[in-house]
Amino acid sequence: MSVGTLSPTLCHVLREVPELAEWVPSGPRDRAISECVAPELRLAPGSWEVERSVAPDGTIGLLVLSGLMVRRVGIDGRTGAELLGEGDLLRPWQLELDDSTLPLKTSWSVVEPTRIAVLDETFMAKAARYPELVGALLALAIERSRNFAVQLAIIHQARVDIRLRMLLWHFASRWGRVRPDGTVLPLRLTHAVLADLVAARRPTVTSALTRLSKLGLVRFDGEVWVLSGGPPGELAVD
Image 1 (cartoon, rainbow, N blue to C red):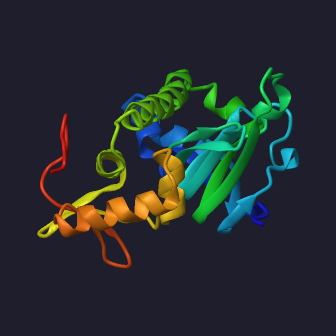
Image 2 (cartoon, helix red, strand yellow):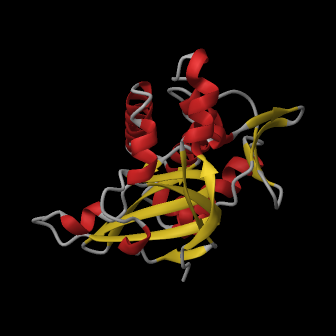
């Protein structure tokens, strides 16, 4: 189980997530970067039991600075999953406060060592001096929603190999980089995690990845995923 550890030092949120700083006009930007600090939460790989104590009352949310996490929501024995990383805004305690007519089960796991900024009342008091940051944080929340909507569209593809190829290219638009032999995706995603992300069974995912590898479209070299060719659109893999 991963237990969150608050760092004794504060992190400069706008320095860690530069796209937030870009919303602030150039004149006061350096001052905003210096002033907008927040406690840093560090998580080791493993399951994460959310502790409300790390986010005191008044905390607007938790902002992922680096690392990789998976949020799973299950119902009636079936599970959906969402991959989260740098720039994602979380409120993991919120579901616990909401009433639901369905017996939902939510769990969190940390895939890679993760650093999170706790956007508490002190941070928000500083950020309030720069009204543009409200829009910036809202944009991050909407971007997370958009990314998940794309994932939902992907899992409606009939074939698992097509879902996997689309999903990996979708992740590549965010985390990938180009090198001579293809587009590299430096994410350590197990077949079990990929199965949850594409709504399939793990053995089916393993078979689909083997097929894609034989076709030269997707391979894992032990460290990174390598995607060949260009991003798929409306495609069928023959």
